[in-house]
Length: 527
Image (cartoon, rainbow, N blue to C red):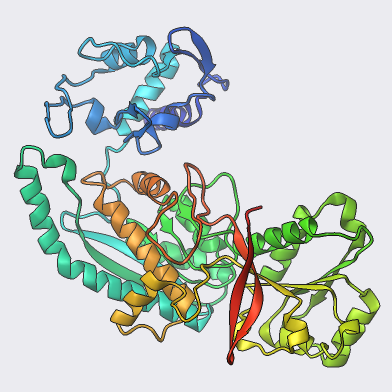
């Protein structure tokens, strides 16, 4: 019974060495690079170049080759289309020489950028044991012609978000599946061409499941595990579960399932997780942009800032992010006021709050009905702060009416594209929704769900037969950096290890256009 335990321990040690550069004795291993430059494993761990998937990457003119079990321990034949040279399969002994001395199995000297690691026998044995398992097992949910995918919604999520996500994903899957057979024929023809292999793309029919979580979030982990046991997906696309996304986030990290761009204003923020990519930090991004905007325009050292926030999970998260971003030397002038989500202060309540606190700047992160009564105090300039900040995660000004005196003081944090007058806000997504007779869906969650579908589809099409969950995340990291695939956001950036696609927001002013409200850009802030 001891052998499986020892093997599991050895594999875990090899994984730690590969990912973190830490040896069995608990310290970083040593290496040299570029001939004589001493480095440590924590500086240049294998994962930095060969990635968690083991499928490698390229940067500039340098290319890190795949180090999966299939790539290392099988012979390679020369392929003119991909410029791959032939070589015999690695053995444990030849691989150890390659790692230590930089000599490939065919006797060629490896690039000097490849570190030469000084590993003792125990570390080397553990690392090679792990490489024997890297990519050796097929990812769950991947068949010869089909791929299992899921989207996760909750019965408690906003109805508009839930309906938008499910309708868009189901329609997108139907359209994609109708064209997959022809794409598979094109890929087969490409393989037959002498130079065609580099153009090969992978195509599988999407088998989409909609997982609907019931009851309070405390019961979701058990529901997720039951759904996974019945039909494990390769990836989770989009989704809408409301304010508490932690159960879905933790489930995807624990099961190592890519979760691509769920619809949420309250994502999980952590430096340790790998498998969930969000659009933005949501209410926390709104708060940081607000703090930065106020601080940069703060022309009165004695001026008071009042944050009036709805006392729910998003409101409290926004307040915490704002407080952390607010300059320490100005905290004595910061006042907060919690508003219970089931109450709506009256005109007199708001007038009393403003009279007592006398803020120069008011931050109003409130529910629509609460904000609507706040706008009613705009009977004279004496009762109003000089600036009033709202945010898209809490407020849609198209559903709120305010007197011009109030509107003129509002600065609204808005991360999305600003349309020109009379044009669509998100032309690419809105054209697709209109063509599919889905234009009646809530615009932003529908557009976000569509982009999640496009991103996942493009990433998987370029994976050829390398259906690895880690490789999907790595492909998205590369593909979505400054992507032109979406018209939802003006600026998108994503790099290795980053998990938020949008890192800033517009700060806009309100402009009336007939009976509608339009946003006019006042500046982009990326805190």
